[in-house]
Amino acid sequence: MNASEYDAIVIGGGPGGYTAAIRLGQLGVRTLVVEKENVGGVCLNWGCIPSKALISAADMMEKMRHAGVMGIRAAEPTIDFAATQQWKAGIVQRLTGSVATLIRGNGGEIAEGTARLVGPNAVEITAVDGSTRRVTARRAVVIATGARVSSLPGFQPDGERILTAREAVDLTAVPRSLAIVGGGVIGMELGMMYQRLGTRVTVVEVADQLLPGTDPDLVRVVERRFKARGGQVLTGARAQSWAPRGDGVALAVQHAGAEKTIEAEKILISVGFRPITDGLGLEAAGVRLDDRGHVAVDRQYRTSFPGVYAVGDVTGGPYLAHKAFKEAEIAAEVIAGHRVSRDWYALPAAIFTDPEIAVVGMTEAEARAAGHDVKIGRFPFSASGRALALGENEGLVKVVADGERLLGVGIAGPEASELIGEAALALEMVAAAEDVALTIHPHPTLSEGVMEAFKHAIGEAIHIANRKPKPQAAEKPQRAMAA
Image 1 (cartoon, rainbow, N blue to C red):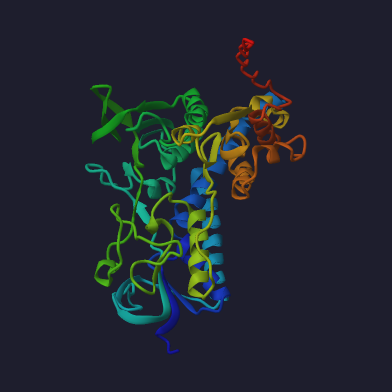
Image 2: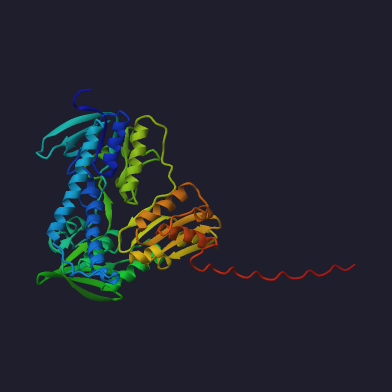
């Protein structure tokens, strides 16, 4: 092969792209990754990792503030947020550097620039300086361009008063007040992070609850904590416009048939993501998009054009890095000639609010809508010795089952993101509720709460009361037949 010919070309170096490149390299497929910014994509550079670093700092502040209940006396903690940002940046640099090393260590190359399809397995790369070059892929091109934040008409981000998540994780000072338009995952994660650092937060959400689509039993736990810290929530509300006011903003909101004004230092627009497909030459190449602009793929992540694959957010929701990881591995193995396809059943998700929420499988509402004979198991963390010892005893584990068949699990509480893995494994292995209930869990741990919720679902919980079975109607005596 010459310098412009590769086995595979991956467009985009985020979770889907870099995973595809690494796995392709492991399988002996020489790969070029084209990335216009930094490898790692949204997740490593300004999404998952940076936000969780800041959330960890906020968690530490919160623990220090309430250490007095454990007899620990200390002065009121303060934060040097510029130093926190330097610490966060170090984490990002370490991880993005490691990803680049792994790509190259597996025989891959990285080219900085933008790319578009210009022919069968041919890609044109435009470098930062405007120069172009054409490269070809002998086996496949993988589209892994991800998604960008959605815009809201009339709210053009300026990085000062109007922010997106990208600017919100890079602030060098904690804002005094923040109005968040969109009470979904990103809005609530960042909002509660800043709230714990001292920001007064108001959330405006067009749906009738925060975190739309999440089980209301779990959302109530988070909303209760948010409001207890002074947070304001307007659901069924729509942001209309904004105007500068002093050194802050005035946000006009339509709510309950009236217009309200929210004053804040900054506005965070958090209304979702949309796929990045523009400028890739997909339409000209005959790559089909769905009605929401995502690249349409089959179970092996092939697009409608031979030799072109797509993985990650660009193929549709849910927009989760671990979904992109798995899709990329499958696509890479298919390209390398392996007989694999999408076959997972359980796709967990975690929301890093305070407390955390994690879910996998069906919600109670989805199970009932599907016609299941739903049985619910619950275990509150207020009954967990470990949660009490940690001082984090709000929330619950909720199990959704149909008889012995496990349908889904939701957790709102401490370390929910870590606890959900067991439930995902149970669903993937088609375990019965009794299987988890009968599995011995170590004591004292938070994971016991998962076991107890499963026990509760089958009426055998030990550390909380079980539901009393409904009395059966007395059987009517049969009349003796006349002789």
